[in-house]
Image 1 (cartoon, chains in turn red, green):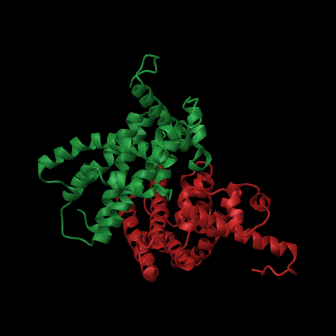
Image 2 (cartoon, each protein chain N blue to C red):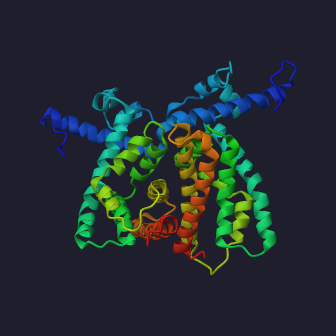
Image 3 (cartoon, rainbow over the protein chains, first blue to last red):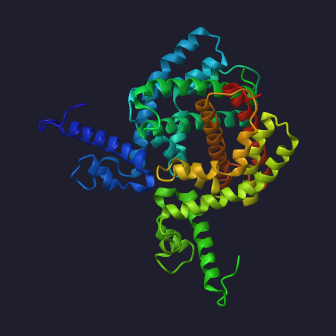
Amino acid sequence: MTSAAPAAPPSSRSALAREKLMAAAERLYAEHGFANVSIRMIGEAAGQRNKSAVQYHFTTRDELIQAILTRHAAAIERLRAPMVAALDALGEVSPRERISCIIVPTIEHHIELGTPSWYGRFLAQALVEPSLREYAIRTQLQMPSLRRLEELRRGPDRDPELLAQNAAMIRQLIVHMTAELEADLAGGRADPATAERSWRRLGENLITAVCGLSSALVGDR
Amino acid sequence: MTSAAPAAPPSSRSALAREKLMAAAERLYAEHGFANVSIRMIGEAAGQRNKSAVQYHFTTRDELIQAILTRHAAAIERLRAPMVAALDALGEVSPRERISCIIVPTIEHHIELGTPSWYGRFLAQALVEPSLREYAIRTQLQMPSLRRLEELRRGPDRDPELLAQNAAMIRQLIVHMTAELEADLAGGRADPATAERSWRRLGENLITAVCGLSSALVGDR
């Protein structure tokens, strides 16, 4: 990232302003909720003098939010792609290995973000907001590594509707349980000093829970 | 509910206005999101001429939302209390019976609400909104029937933190999967003509999934 030195070319200054707006938006939305944050507040928190900074750089609130979602999805994809490639090379994949590949990259991304982070609470809100829900789901499902993991699923053919419900349950658990730990860490209900351990424990518990759930619901064993 | 006839005493007219405001708020929030609905829009949709109708009847937006949450929680409690009493009389309670008692009353409440309904999407948003989250969780957990079900849990003593995480996972699955079916029914992605069957199928799948999840995570068998 280029610094905001006066000599920076306009494109770099513009990229920096976008970064600042995205960081401010994510934090404000996570802490106060989508309903309680105006795009003007985001511009101010990002140190932008122009009152229309969000409109200038992102056109609309939804496009700003989508840019944040896309960036995190890409970061998680960078963590998941090598894990899936390694599984792929093995040939034989157990349900637990496949489920670990869904969950671990999200957990590792949260650990990389540090404490406090805001992405978890931000994503949870985007997934229940009518105008953003479909985009947020699609951004996650379209990742090539997740699509490849779906192809690696073994076992008998199963009811597509049931498989879709199983996938939705896994998504809800990952999104909302990580948002909850993030909120607990930010609010001091979980100790930030041992954040990494808490994240990995949540990851292990999610893997165990999702394995049990999928085994019961769609016979993934 | 008293009709709005001119002769109605003020207290009845006031109760009717509150009803209308709650119904309008629930619908608008579910369809457009907390961030895209002003309290003035709610007053207008409820047919209130006074621009401060929400403030007059509920003081703040959060108190309006809390009133809606409390009313639904009470309706679900009315469905769950006799189920838990029947289990209590049996003496012996299997995990599946206990888990059914958590899930079935919510499903039956959604069926009673008809199609389209708005409560599911409304609750999902309240549970991820920072200023409402704790109230929304507390409203659900404080129900006597849920507390009694917790006491009926059998088996060895388990790590309280793990039990809390298990309970949180169950809550996330119920809230967000019912919100998703409600959105699918309202948006025509699921057929409203067979709504009741879809609700019961989701209920069965949630019971199976939660049994598998809890068995794997905390050894509920």
